[in-house]
Amino acid sequence: MRPIDLSQFPQPESNDSSSVEFALNAIRNAESESTSNEAYDAFLWAVGNNHAGTFYPVVLGALPEIEQILMRGTEWAKRAAIESLIDLGGSFAPEDGYENYLGASVQETLKAFIHSIRHYIAPLADGDNALAGSAAELLELIDDQAV
Image (tube, rainbow, N blue to C red; front, side, top):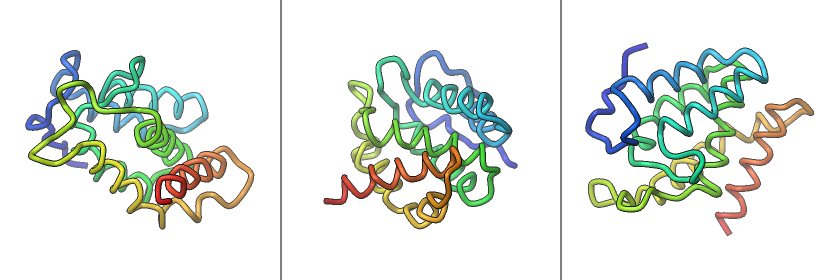
């Protein structure tokens, strides 16, 4: 897979040029519950401040890759991506001073993306495994926000 050029997006000062791509690779390669959890945590740190519950505009640059993972990834990769979206779309907010990027609200753009992938998420909610539970939680978030 080709590297993403995320250099134009504001991102955490702690990041280097490969932080987000490294976190996305961790999601792509998740193969168990523990590696899925580690990948989701790494991604939240790469796109923001997981402890503070904030994100930077770089999250928008990562969304096409998250969509690809949801379409083609393994069960654990999809779960890591979904868990990330639950936090980012639910309790997280833009880092102070980074609410807008190129004239658009980062939070509203992120929310629109999450709502647009509902058709990928809905079929994943069937079943009683960890992925289905995460997918059902994201669907609930989407549906609550749509009202």
